[in-house]
Structures are given as structure tokens and as C-alpha cells.
Amino acid sequence: MDNQLRSLVMLCTAVLLVSCNNGTKTEKSNSTSIPAEDLKPVVSHVMTKEEQTRLTPDAILDDFIAGNKRFQSGVTTVRDHSKQARKSAPGQFPKAVVLSCVDSRVPVEDVFDQGLGDIFVGRVAGNFVNEDLLGSIEFACKVSGAKLVLVMGHQHCGAIKGAIDDVKLGNITAMLSKIKPAVAMSQDFNGEKTSKNDKFVKHVSENNVLYAMDQIRKKSPILKEMEDKGQIKIVGVFYNLTDGTLEFLK
Image (cartoon, rainbow, N blue to C red; front, side, top):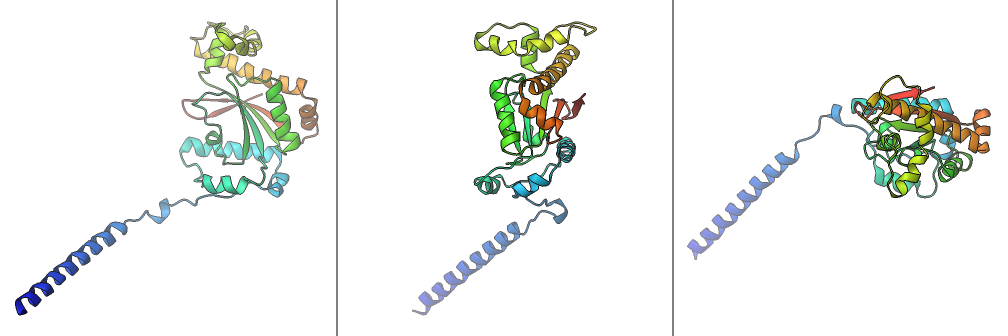
């Protein structure tokens, strides 16, 4: 009987020792932490109507420029998109609308370091303007209060190259016809006018942005009036894929 009791005590002691050792190891493994200086606050705030009302077109543009600099340097804002999605569900009050190409290499919100609920984004290959996009921009500005309209072309745009090459393929043919005016505007270019010449492609892309801005003003009396009254600003920009920089167009 004594031997059995002694064996039981030894077994219990061994179990306790193993448990303690495992606890110590677990505690040590959990003790590893990120240095305080490397921690970033997680943003879950979403734009409110009051904040949107206080903003000016110039302030929003400055915010976009600062956000792009953060994007270039790799220090973009850390956001809790799940919380932002829930908070923005009752209503949205974006500060701007961006007309961009569908190109997967152009992450619009990231390029300007903007969060969920901050901007409307309209995307179509070649970032041109048609009736649907004009209506979308009018909704963004006149109905929902956005104060900046930003038309953004980009480096190495496939739609621009397709328009230069006069590609004929299904519905792409009709789509590219919307970009052809920019190709016609670019015939003053001094150099090889082909899709293989990156400088010419950029020249056409920039003219395509300027043409889209002109179409917005000509075909939308609503937006033209808002711009004339200083309620919105319409801006054109060219985005460089290689380094994330922006070139604003006059």
C-alpha cells in the first residue's frame, strides 16, 4: 500500500512539473511584443456630414497630395475596415469622387491613402466620360456632397494603347472610340506616334484626362455651375505606376 501511495505521489509531482514547465514556455512565447514606437493607431472613424460640410475643395486636394506622399513612402494609415464598414452603413459622406481606369495596378484609395467611406470611385478602361459616369459624378457631388472631382490617367495604360493601335475587338471597339479624340488631339507630338513609344502613350493619356475634364464641363451643366460657384474643384492627374507619384495637369 505504501509503495502504491508513493508511486501516486511521484506521478502527481511529475504532472505538476510538466504543467509548470509548459506554462513557463507559453508565458515566454507570449511575452514577445512589438516595440511601442512601431505601433500605429488603427483608424476606425468614418467621415460625417458635419466634417464633410466643413471641408473645402482645396483642403481635400491638399489631403490627397499628403496621402499620396504617405503612399510613396510606405507609411499609409492603418485602418479597421470592418468597423468602418459597419459605421458607414447608415449613410455616406465622401469628400471626393475619382474617375479612374479599371487597371488593377491603380489602387485608387491606396494611392491617396483614403479609407472606406472617404471617396466615390468611378472606373472604366481609359477613364473616359460617358452619360453613366457623368450621372455618377453628379450624384456624388450634387446629391452626396463630394467637393473634389479628380480625373486620373496612368502610365502604361492598355486602353490608351488600344486606341492608338485602333484595335477592333467586340465591344472594345466601341469603348475605344471614346478615347480616339485624345489620340487626335495628340498628333502634334514630336516623335514616333505608336503604342510602343511610352512618351507618346503618356502624351495621349494626359490629353485623354484633359478631354474628359472638358466633357464634364460641357455635358454637365450641374457640375459646371458647381465649379463656377467654387463648390467643387475639377482636377486632372497622371499617375506613375513605377514610383507611385502624381503629376497634376493644367
